[in-house]
Image 1 (tube, rainbow, N blue to C red):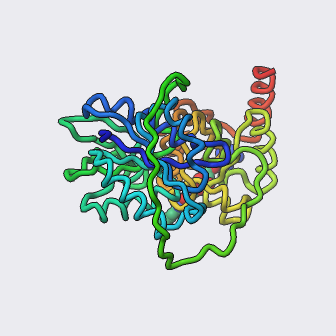
Image 2: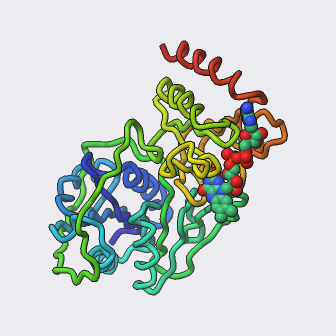
Image 3: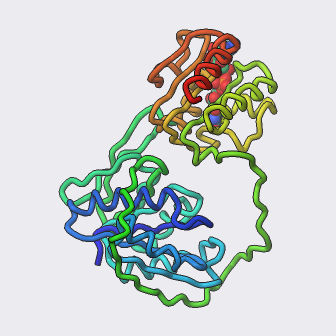
Length: 324
Ligand SMILES: Cc1cc2nc3c(=O)[nH]c(=O)nc-3n(C[C@H](O)[C@H](O)[C@H](O)COP(=O)(O)OP(=O)(O)OC[C@H]3O[C@@H](n4cnc5c(N)ncnc54)[C@H](O)[C@@H]3O)c2cc1C
C-alpha cells in the first residue's frame, strides 16, 4: 500500500512530463503521509515505461496493459483505475490536469465515494491531509482546499511541480493488473492528429502571445519570428482568435489552453481575467503594452510601456545576440 498513487500517462517517448512531475510531487509529499509512491500505467504497451517510473520516484508500478486500452475511453479506463485504487488503498490519488485527468478524476472520486480537487497549482500536507492551492474567479484569486474523505483525488496542473532527478539505480515492484474486456458505450472510429509545426503550446518553456493590440494578422508573423529565435510557441488572446488573426487552437485562457511556461511574453494583450486564467500560472510574465494602466502589468514581473512595433525588433535582435 502506497500513501500516494499517481495515475500516469504515456506517449511515444514514454512517461509524459506531467507524470514525471507528479512522481516528484508525490515523493516530496509522501514523507508527510508515512508511505510510499505508486504509479498506475493504463494503456497498450505501457509496461515498457515501468523502469523509467522507478527512476522517477515510483516504489510500486501497476501496469494495466491491454489492446482494449489503446485509446482513452471512460468506459474502459474507469473500472481499471478504480480496481487499482481499491487494490492499493492510497490516501491520495494524483492525476494530471490533462484531457484524460479532467474526465477521469471526478468520475473516479464519485465511484470511490470521495471528492476531487481539480487543477491544483501547489500541494502541501497538513494534519495528514493534502492542502491544494488552486486558481479561482478566472485566475483573480487563489483558494486552498482539502478533501475530507479518502482517497483524496487531486488533479495537478502540468509544469506546476518539479520532477526528481532520474536515478537509474532505483527499483520498483511491478504488479501486472488483469484487465477485463470492457463494455464500451462509444466506439472510436478513427484518430486525426492536428498538423502542427514546432513546439506545442502546452509543452513550451517560452510562450510568445499576441492580442488585439497587434492590429492585424500579419503581426503574428513577427511573433512567430521572435518565437523562432527563442525556441518558443506562439499563443493568442481570444480577441485576436475571434478576429480570425490566429487559429483558435492557439488561444490561451479560460475557454482556451492553460499554459504554465517559464516565460510568458504578452504582447498587446490587456490582461483580462479570462486570459489570465490560461497563463496566470506562468513562472514569469513579461508584458509589452502601450497603455501603462493595462491590467496585464499587475501580473507581470517586467513590463515595457511602448508601442510593440518599436519594441519587438529591438527585443528580437537583443535575444538573438544573447543566444548566439
Ligand atoms: C466567457 C468568456 C470567456 C473568455 N475566454 C477567453 C479566453 O479563453 N482567452 C482570452 O484571451 N480571452 C477570453 N475572453 C475575452 C476576454 O474577456 C478579453 O476580451 C480578451 O482577452 C481581450 O483580448 P486582448 O487583450 O487581446 O484585447 P484587448 O482587451 O482589446 O487589449 C488589447 C491591448 O493591446 C494594447 N495595445 C494596443 N495597441 C498596442 C500597440 N501598438 N502596442 C502595444 N500595446 C498595444 C492595448 O493597450 C490593450 O491593452 C473571454 C470572455 C468571456 C466573456
